[in-house]
Length: 444
Ligand SMILES: Nc1ncnc2c1ncn2[C@@H]1O[C@H](COP(=O)(O)OP(=O)(O)OP(=O)(O)O)[C@@H](O)[C@H]1O
Ligand SMILES: Nc1ccn([C@@H]2O[C@H](COP(=O)(O)O)[C@@H](O)[C@H]2O)c(=O)n1
Image (cartoon, rainbow, N blue to C red; front, side):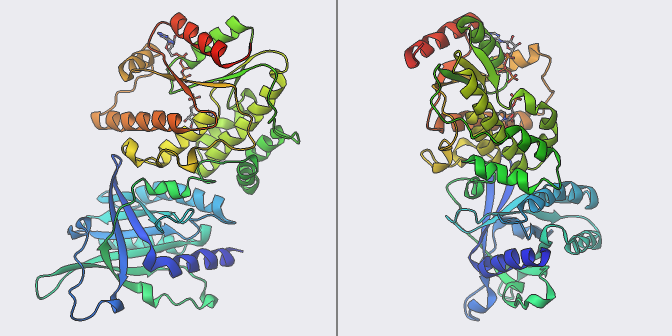
């Protein structure tokens, strides 16, 4: 099985290697370095080697690492967990002078083509220690192994400079007869950037699930590794997800943390004599911390399934009374899309992208209200709850970018779209405003 997996991903990567673009994430504020590979054989003796992208001109040894099973497919759970754990392993085993950056390899505009990896800049005195760690990794059979490449800066007699990539380790099974000679040495050339974060290519069914079937598939695949996933699936039970339009209105309240969702949902329950639900539902609480520690593929599948369990509860409750729901699909999709990207709002998948669509099999609420709040007031409310961490300025700025991405993603989701309400006024004023919206939008 492992060999088949190595074969499939290894061959796919090998066949596409020269067409792929590599995007090194230089920092969380969204700065990328894009490069492509050009086979040396294609460059004639008369043409000078292409000038290298900037980051490679440093006097540092550079490496890239890609988990072979990094794409979709039958071992995606193992690959995702291996890639997730690899960061900690590299951080603890590599010399402290090694800088570790995320790198993505993808085929431009090809959905699902993204493979995630790490880019390593080694400024340590002892390159052997780094190479030993990489060599140990290459022997790892987990998730199909790791492709490791090194980058070499060269200066020609005429003063020209170039960078070449050498494949150090390509863990293909011996009997697969895959010829990697073409990939062993390539020139590294600058490449055009995508208009958005490359993660958008793999968001569907890795970060956001557009049907119950796709989300449950992930939990089924990890049943042996994470027994908790079986318990979650059992809770989902045999009942078909609720898709029918319920008798009473279902109103979802969304927003970043500390925007006042709990306060408002409780007041709405009292004012309307409504049932109050939340997603993820209470019954999933024992397993939430476990999935919060897992990589996005598993974590997001858990929250997606949570929405379907809440939808079943909504269907039942809405036959008796209005239903108020604290978080639902908008939260799942907006946080997932905003976390997969980094940097400014412009790095999100473009407005109107199919990635913002509502899953066709998930109960649609009658109204979705998004609470927005001035960041300083939100900070003040967090402080009142004793939750403000002393953060470095830089971290605060990254936090600000993340909040902006989440809010923008919330606003781009369609089917239903959310209605924005300023949560800055007093709790009672916010309640009155939302009650007014409910009367306007829903039959009561
Ligand atoms: N309109 C308001 N004006 C002033 N303070 C408010 C208002 N609404 C809520 N608060 C206060 O702000 C804090 C955060 O509110 P709340 O817990 O309702 O937010 P939340 O969105 O549910 O947060 P989380 O998602 O983190 O649970 C609480 O201390 C609450 O009392
Ligand atoms: N329907 C949901 C609800 C929540 N999430 C994720 O949980 C985090 C926020 O939850 P709080 O309990 O802290 O308010 C957030 O990181 C979301 O990723 C979700 O995905 N779907």
